[in-house]
Image (cartoon, rainbow, N blue to C red; front, side, top):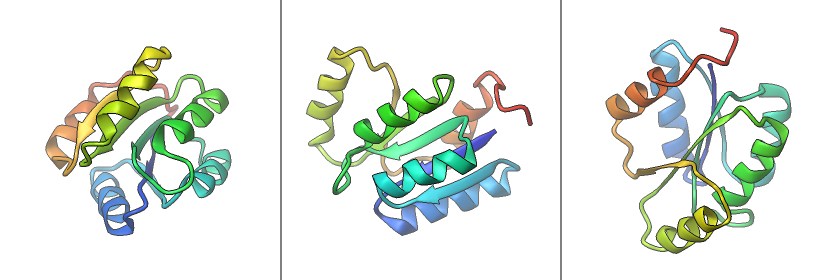
Amino acid sequence: MHVLVIDDEKYVADTLVMILEQSGLRAAAAYDGQSALKKAETFLPTVVISDVIMPGMNGIEVCQAITAMFPDCHIFLFSGQAATNEIVREAYARGVSWELLAKPVEPDDLLARLAALPDNSGG
């Protein structure tokens, strides 16, 4: 499983990557939408965990682009901001059905959700 973590708060992204790697998963961080798209091209994510509210491209826009590249990629959105509700509601109205996690993400909960995913990673 290749997990791409996208968050403009570097310590959040880096901490999640560290937790995922310590759990035996391959993980990488990106700190904005554009760098996430570039990283996705070479990292080939099977799972994306993305903040919703970010400068430039928001998490919905980034994940839509990644889903277009990798249709089988599983998406988790997360945010601690109230503004997320309206953005996510609009995305759901357009047919997006990604999972939403609240910040701060509980590592054990996240790892359990990842373990429950079908293994489409090839390793």
